[in-house]
Length: 133
Image 1 (tube, rainbow, N blue to C red):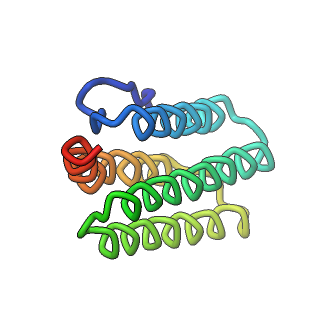
Image 2: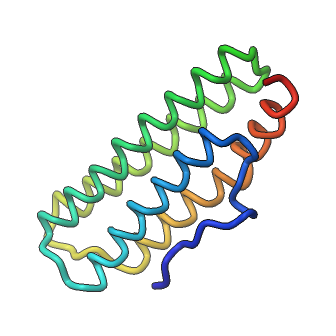
């Protein structure tokens, strides 16, 4: 699978959020390469954990900005964050808790998980914050 590449399409127009997204994409690409390179299951698990932890931090960052700037979408956006983390933790348990290898379908799930959220909910957040910051 090819790398995710940061471009203007993924920008939400808020520098600090865009920087977070660049970091998440970088870690996703590290995981993607690790799978392709046949790295150990332990390394893959550690990299996935890093991706999840950075995502949790990023979601907290977004939620803080939404509270500070009184976004009307806060509850909905936070619920989406919780759902995304839950689904990724379930994927993590499936992979780490079994002998099944990381498959293309897993990396495709993570790619969709990351990009769809950026392009939809975070795009709306970026538009809102651009008007109020």
